Image (cartoon, rainbow, N blue to C red; front, side, top):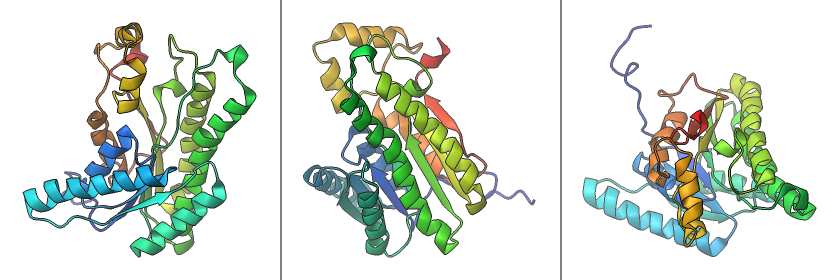
Length: 279
């Protein structure tokens, strides 16, 4: 192969594409959607609560006008918002089908951020809670991946990239908080990505996981507010001695989505944890 500048230096531009971002009103997703918009992708913001999702989309559009249109003189890619329960396969299929219709093209990128955590001692974990969490975190990851990939496979489009947000909790056990259902769900997400990567490689659909360490999202800030001992405990186990800011995961997402930057990367679990797993 001839090595020109174009095939040596990767591009992280996503111009003309559609990206679906689930958990779209959350702290991590709100940063990721800005980055994808700035790289030229249309965005479908998806979350369970319609009002919060609408608000997140409106804030994203305003950010785009201020930082893309006004600052750079460019147009802002289209942003839509959708209410969706990722634990309901039929609802996911309906929403993803409508996203493709509304945008007039098939979504090529999926960043799946939806999920949640609960803390119960393992021997006291209520069965109903565990079932609900696994339904959202693990089966929801399968459902959104299926509904994203089906039209690509059926159309013969042969291009797509999925980033499932896992967690370092899928490969380590957090301390001091007990969260067995969350940990096992994220371990499942990591292996789900590997399995899908193998099955869908013939269709050129790459599937990877991004596994963050502790992130200072608004939700996390609320959790540790007034609990300095928990924050201190978490930071003491991180070689970098701090928690992550949401924007520190943007580069990883853009890498995993990029057609040229990660064209040979699939089935990979990219851990971004400040070194937590090293200890």
